[in-house]
Length: 94
Image (cartoon, rainbow, N blue to C red):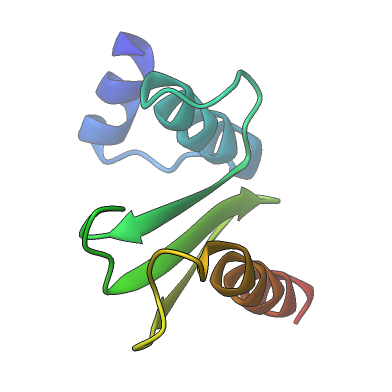
């Protein structure tokens, strides 16, 4: 993690594979399983969500999708998460 931090702080170009490795390390540091390449988070949090954000790093490209809707909340999680995941995949697939 320290090497990755120094690399990013140096301002040097980071190759595509290394950029996604750093993204994955950050996800693991935040409690996701080893090898995670994407994340889904509630904004600002799960207790009072206003939006759901999905992020991924694939092929050296960082992708993020934010879905804000009135129906985000208890009982809506699976549907909303599915909509965000579909939007993320559409962005990645072009």
